[in-house]
Image (cartoon, rainbow, N blue to C red; front, side):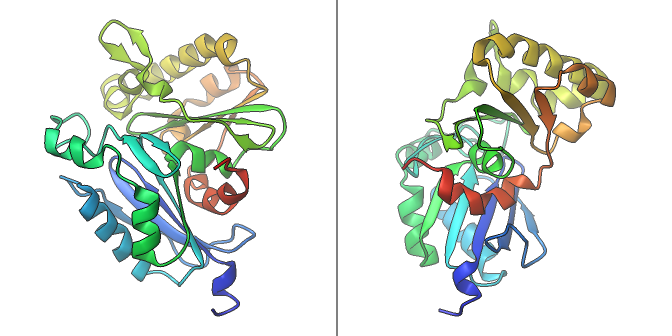
Length: 255
């Protein structure tokens, strides 16, 4: 293998609305401009693999890959993925056939075989967190996008994933919908930002984090006034970490 290729990681960030990919060296420097496509729906596992292969073929060759995707991922196996089991994307009806296809799908094994390189598959918030945490103390990452992503790190090591976004905030509503993209558009950034601050105030005594990182595409839309009021233990981080974190994720995982 070419010496340059040996140092490169293909990183793919799979979201509910879009999929982004690039290739990074061991220092986290991109070796190609990011590619972005709309997430195709319906999106069965077979199309998932085909789509990611197409992105990989458009980028420089790498020696390993990291894929972040929404949902509960355990040891590279999909336990549940709320977006990809829908007929036409977020907030559309669930397709029972898609739910069956995704449940128990070994994404890591399938992608390792298809790409021909070792592949790590994690929840997308976990990959994002790998790109921003300090590695000291108890650190929580919340990503704000189509819905809510969550990752927890202790001493720089990734803790088992929990689908915190499904926790109820009130009857019939969970955090995923309460602060997701649909509500941001309905409320406007100012009122939506207040919800983010309320969520943080509610969660601080639950997690007792040393540091909370707010990432994802919508974190930049929190109003500056509300960011200042959130406290010194809260940091807003760039969305680009969702891909650059693919390099460091290999050293932080526990499986």
